Amino acid sequence: MNLHELFDKCLNKNLIDLTISGRKDKSQDEVSKVKIRPVIIKNNLLFQVSEYKGTKVYHDNYSEADVRNYIEKMMTDNFKQAQFKMTDADAQVLSGKNSNMTIKYKKSCEVRCQKELSHNRNKKYILEEGKKVDFLVDLGVMTKEGKIVNQRYDKYRQINRFLEFIEDILPELDSTREQTIIDFGCGKSYLTFAVYYYLKVLKGMNIRIIGLDLKEDVIKECNRLAKKYGYEKLEFHVGDIASFKDVEHVDMVITLHACDTATDYALGKAVKWGAKVILSVPCCQHEANGQIKSELLSPVFKYGILKERMAAIFTDAIRADILEANGYQTQILEFIDMEHTPKNLLIRAVYTGKKNREAAEKLKKMESELNLDLTLNKLL
Image: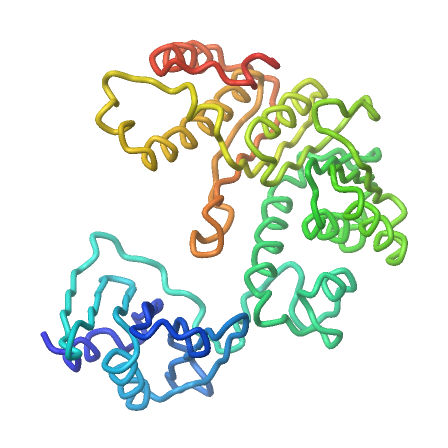
């Protein structure tokens, strides 16, 4: 198969995206990467080309004929590889010495969903593009005209995806009294502000939200912004997850990228409070990596990177099962696409009161086999 035959197969509506990378000359001043996706504009199929140069991204739309020439030139003169991702296939182009092309094309064993082909990416988001939201403007995600900043579109999608998880559990929250929500390790509080805006401003719910983080300057700025927006029931405190004792009851606990065992302390607090909802995106699961042993899996664990990934998977599975053993219905969901962040798993737990004893026994056996005794076990 030559390059033009590949284009015949790939440059159509079934293309999900194409990534061109690996500059041949390593120039810092030129385009470092190119991403291409199909778009529909005025009922015509075009191809949106996004060129990454330094911290900026430049967009332009090409006809099929023009994008063919563009890709061929890029692969001949500037780049080493191109990866085509289709709804039903994958393809790779490698450009070697003298611009010789090696082309591989393989049908996929699954049919993937096509992304929105609209040029304006008009997916119905909870926080709609075009409607100004003050905190998104101050956080650099949205312009004063309500448009999403191109370089922050991934953050915009992430915020809306998280609000979709919140939307799913709204029936679990008690609408007859004030609901207390805590965000452990809130950081710059993109999601904390988003949750408050969604629940209080858009949904009119009776809520109080507390953001907790160790960085004093960050907390000071978050409190300034909350006051600026008139968010009276949103407050931020400097504090440590393990020692936080300022409230007696919490209805929802949020923990995003709390590093290593900080996630366990947040989950432990949530269970002891009897929190109705837990939303946790774990991060840096080092504890299990230092403990995990298995003669059966030793051929896998001898590779450091595989051991680290397996330890992270086992850690989050154990956390989810411990929550189930303590009366929660638990799911592990994809938070956002892997291309945006490798920490893309979210543990969502809703308290039912039905403790799963069978899960607890199976969990204890697995932990014994893997030599694991994690912090959440000790806390609960």
